[in-house]
Length: 267
Image (cartoon, one colour):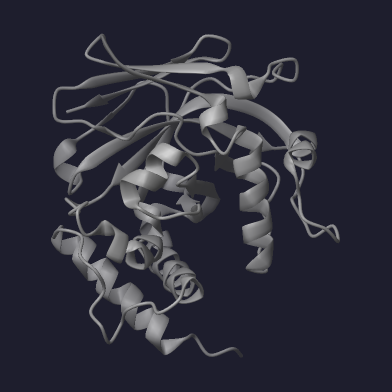
């Protein structure tokens, strides 16, 4: 029987306590801090396991920092990933209470559902490989809880951010679209409205040049970690638009004309 890594488990328990107390996001204390990206993912895995009895088993993955905009915001030069809990996946029109989060933020993305498992194939996955294994896609909103993080310090806290499940607090997806293969996903334009006012616009190409480039990165990263992305799982490609900070009373809609729209109410 394999021994659970004591350091990672202790760090994950510290993060659970922080969430339960709903305190502001800070770096892990020095005796628990991740020293490397691998350490951060080990803590993330333990954190997911500690919370899955209440938040649900793994239902997919997110990719973070897939756009230049977001990499500049967090001052980190590459993407990172996190697993999604089944009980935190919602459908269009979901209503969430702001008081349930430290600070709720919304990211506007394309989500995809796999039709076959992503398993090792002897060489890295590329965007064309990913297209072959995608069943449906949809506009989607990632729910992010940054717990009032101080963005002036975040570049020094990215490993804790990764460990803290990349701040994922769920997702809301629109209607899944099966007939998408004739669309140029890089050229899809997405717009976000808050309380019926246009706030921002982005394109599929803002996600590492193409949303499936983000998913090929994810596939290779997950396989590197000796895991498998299974058929039926939902994967988030990363935000096309700068993170939106919302508050109680806000209604947010993200629209991609060729795919439809998805909305959320913050109460």
